[in-house]
Image 1: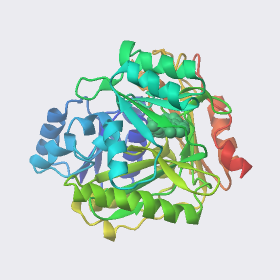
Image 2: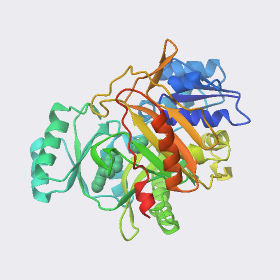
Image 3: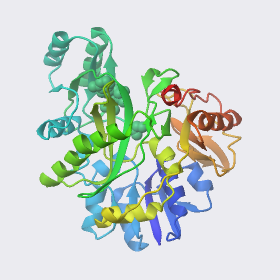
Length: 426
Ligand code: AMP
Ligand code: GLY
């Protein structure tokens, strides 16, 4: 069978790599893919990005299954289009993808269904937003409504920061957020204390299968400092998600979300990612929903997935997820992202990359912002590589990943040496 992976990041490289190992899969296309998927003889890059071109290709080539990595094509309705044309695809419809594409939609949905999350208010008027912040004080969280590649959130520790974030998001928009319906809007939230974890499930609209737990590191700097990024590294499992927390998340967050979306006529099919904040009492609350696998969470999850990924995705697309069985490697997987010079503000492209080690049983380098230019691997995006290792403990997996990172060279490379630090302290 032929399968198609839509996207170009590390998450999509990991999806394609795992799919290529399925006994039922003959060819894996990645559209548009990156330098790493171009170099891998098991994968074929496809220079297409428009969703109607992808549907034409899937129809002409008799693609057995398409899976979508990033949120942008999902929010543009790729799943609706494929289904209308009778093409099998795993992902949420445009309506269901609003859980990620509109923070206001997600917050109102959670409120309607009693799903635990931070108190919030949403504003289009700057004066009202400023007054709200004055009334509630800092710390407070300001979020741009719309897709912002993980960067449209300011956790303001002072009132001055909060006011500046409002002025930016409702005015100059230096973050370049894609506004919902052309209207700039901010969501202002209560600051939640606790430890974060990523809780990702697959759903066929009715049945749900939880993937292994994971945690990413969103800040650029060691000790979780500096600006937010798309994610500088991740590890799985996340020990903060104890069996008790796991049960509460399924019961209080995941099941009501899947049931609520179905009841409202927009059943959620695809990967649903709940970003969690877990407080000292083990009470989980939702920070955000994403309508897709996380990146770099996908890289560490797929490094641990032992059962057939094609099987999982096909059951998800066919409405038979109750028959899917997942097996995970008992070891820890840990991924260290190597980012380009200037990331996250202004990543530089075109730096030559060398020293990427060959994959072994416990080490895999997933590519993200890389391209092949006249046969030379060069940087082409903010997050360049995710060096992912398996190990019997977090520390061992971390050391194995970092040893590989130190052998990889490109000018201005940035990475964190402390990925997994919270799990090491546990
Ligand atoms: P989001 O894009 O909504 O996931 O937000 C990005 C990051 O900002 C999260 O991973 C948290 O670290 C932080 N954050 C967002 N909302 C809150 C909140 N209400 N309280 C505390 N931290 C938050
Ligand atoms: N790693 C966080 C995300 O994919 O949004």
